[in-house]
Image 1 (spheres, rainbow, N blue to C red):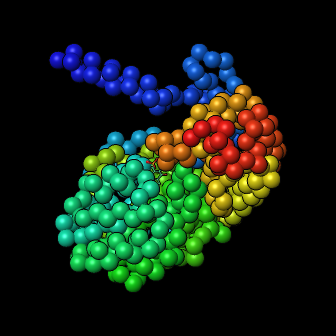
Image 2 (image 1 turned 90 degrees about the horizontal axis):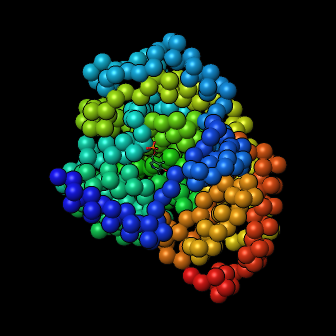
Length: 413
Ligand SMILES: *Cc1c(COP(=O)(O)O)cnc(C)c1O
């Protein structure tokens, strides 16, 4: 009977609310883009805002070519597959997309999944057993953590982006049959890009395989958008890349693993989220082919994103904000105080700028921030409006030009 469980769940939900951690969903009333309309809370009036919190890095979520390809797929390949790949569900276009992704990333082969969460969930268990070791970055994405939980390999956690600690853990794991290093290509709360070149150097020295989850890099990091490996000058050195079709590459859904041929071959035989989950819809596949074709022809969009990122980072720094330095379109505006991050986000929303404040436990204690995400869908005018709004709100809260200590002295930790 549900009765006793119901009481417990209600208590649990109340405690989440009391802790101020209850996640409310905001309704977007338009297609995903730079200019959107949002309703929040549900009975509030519609608010027109400039969106700075989507993973729509290349502005492709509502791109005319992508929409056209999706429409075309319905006509040529139908809507759904109603089958897993290995029973009756693979179409020519699925194989075509896998080839195109492999070519784009410079990898030997690619296997598609319903999501990158599934790609990570189905990666470790078929490859690693009790005699093996996974050496994993402390800040890796939840799906990597869960994927590792599903395999029997011994787990070693190294400090975020800390090469000395990674080396220490590789030495600790020297007796394992195989060592696999697992890292996010970019860490989503900080916008830090992992040091893929140095990770590959250590992998060479200690005989390890390298896995990179490039969800926050594929399509735009690196001179031609190949991702974190290109950004770090390590193309061809990474053994396995997992990534998503749900961020820069059109933003719908779907994920994939690209890598050495034998690894992908074995995943097709043994990876459970692939074997026991439905084939990705033809609509997503054809739209993704259009995206990869577009990104293979020109670097225009990633170049525009880079220019937008530079303009925003420079403008915010001159305005006196404390931002985490870097080159990634994820730009954390450090505020240190949880309440302050929430009131600034709310004030910006009233100014028509849509951003989200993050605080513990999503980021470390005393490291509250607003995370801004730039997009190639933004024009300079959007960026300048955001900097102006930030400046106005920053003045109101008296944080411009203030150091961490000064902000904490006024607002508390
Ligand atoms: C978003 C994200 C995922 C999940 O991708 P989906 O395709 O949405 O399941 C996995 N890993 C990282 C690092 C991500 O940022």
